Length: 295
Image (cartoon, rainbow, N blue to C red):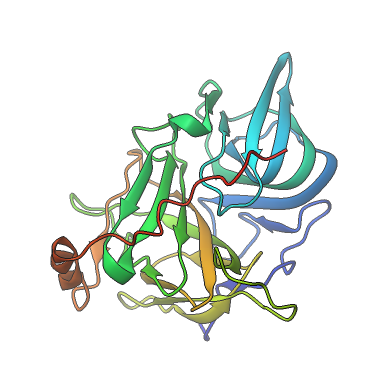
């Protein structure tokens, strides 16, 4: 593998109405999927042996499947706090209607579970870390928050100058202390809250992933809205928000094991930093909440 083989710029994975599609047709990828679209109208997905989660990124949407219909109250941007999310089990065909930006997280499975709607006021919001390692995590699709067979989904807001996915960690070997999971990072970036926006602003952050064993991976990239990094194995992190720019990412995880669990191993050269969080205060800029409701 060469540097950034697992990094895909915005639009590189375009397919039909979707700006990006991650799936098993990518060499070396098999357990997770993601679709992202700018929508002004509707888009449909047929029944398939894939469980899915619909996540509004910008705007609100209506999702219909057979005789069921759900309204997902969204947000003005990914930096405006949580959104409604909807889980749809394997072999469910559905249609998404609305205007805005939407993501659909996926994991192949033949196990059929019922649909589940989590309202944004019910989303567990975690302020993780401290000091410049403070970030805001929306744990709407993790075990204990929303039922699924394999799919694990969450999203992270990292305010300007902070680090997240830090210490770097891995989940690529099944054991009592670690899960085997692929992971997708979908990024967005924006001028930080309260800053004046220059006309030539180009928001960005940084992301890295590197080998944990003999399996090669080497990602060292500038990332911005619409970019996608895949982590089939290896240590991943940090994700760093540049001064002046906030960074967001959506994480999609799943693996081959029967247990739906998210257990990690820190890079042993970095894990020590966690003990110092107790000596620091969380970043007072967080939590980010909605300035006003999405329309």
